Length: 263
Length: 264
Image (cartoon, rainbow over all chains, first blue to last red; front, side, top):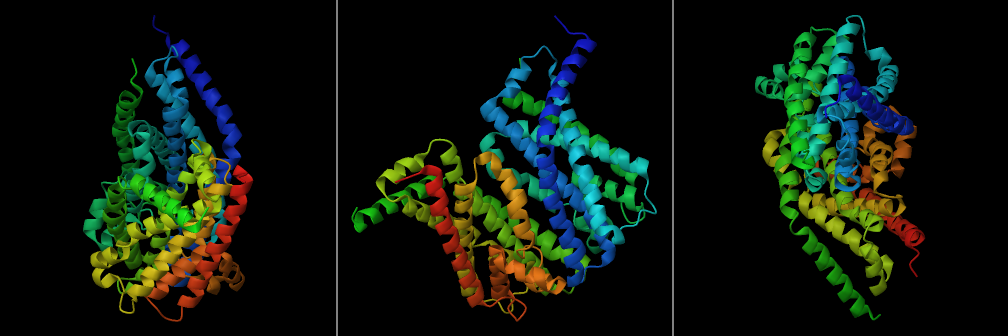
């Protein structure tokens, strides 16, 4: 027996609704957690680093990099939950017995992740801007471009974290995910240094950074909010992030087959 | 129990911990010696320093880079000490151990093991970084014996801090909140990114408050041992601060452990 589109959509909505109930319960906790990390980063880079000699013009681009760092840490928390669920609670196994194609089920997971990312990062953006308002200039902001790269990046992060949480087993995830995957991705990206400045200082480092997906996310944020001149063009960044969803979707697919053994 | 028997039991517990970690040592060495030093050197000491402060700032770059040792030591001690929290949530092997010797001694043994293990894994980190960074790592005034002494005392302090956290936290689900709400502010105000004199320059009141942060004694001690000079705390201040914090954390962990497990 196969379900119609409307049946699938109804079950999909029920799963997202259930996730929404869970999100509502922990939303404040997540916002406070995110704010603590965000304030620590923004305070260090906007108030303390200039005392060491960092130019003030770098504060705004680094702040946007810090937003990605907060997203990255938050994504890990979400992935952690899935990893524990696959290992202990196995609620995901129950959901896989629902009369719903697997792609719909995982689309519901991605949707819930995106909602959670969105609700937590919006207050972070506002709080960060309030802290550094004197050092950020919105004269070249393109709201539409920013909304596009922002939403696409959230979907990319949701797919990426869902993929790694299903692909790696619990022990490997616990011991190695930060040193072998997340930290190299975060540190070897232009999060703390705008890409064009990194390229100017060392072209080989600049080219090396282009392999990293985070380069396009962070540079897309920067160019859409601060203007295209000093950063990689936002249209190019948006396109690359869209393309990067193909390997991350494949990672989810591989993870489902590797860890969950769907029939 | 006679003191010799107690020492023997403690020794066997230590051997048991070494045995359970012997398979993980390769993973830890790979992660902390082969992966972290090159990426942290490239980002913090090389690229960020050059872009933020200009290419000829080896000293500032080294100051910035040293904070990373704190982060790695905290990761390692946390990973090792939180076995206690997982144990208290699950099998409660420690209950069996507490029937053999005083539970306080078991906590001390775990602190010493976690500190020693983290110290051994971290030992090559700074020499490796010097090898990678060459002239970008300012080691002209480095005192290697003091560096290793500060590193070991720091590991002791971080291990006791994490054992205390394991005794205070409700369960392993609280770990994420512990990292974000407690460790993150302590890291940022503990010299992870900038030294104490910059925090004090920004706000002398904040500078005074930071004296209560145990992490500052570690980063300042490492900076004193590597760079030297009047900008950082003296060795005596750092070692005294770290040992005092270790004592406070250990005594507090005895109290909270007793509350949690109600051992006799």
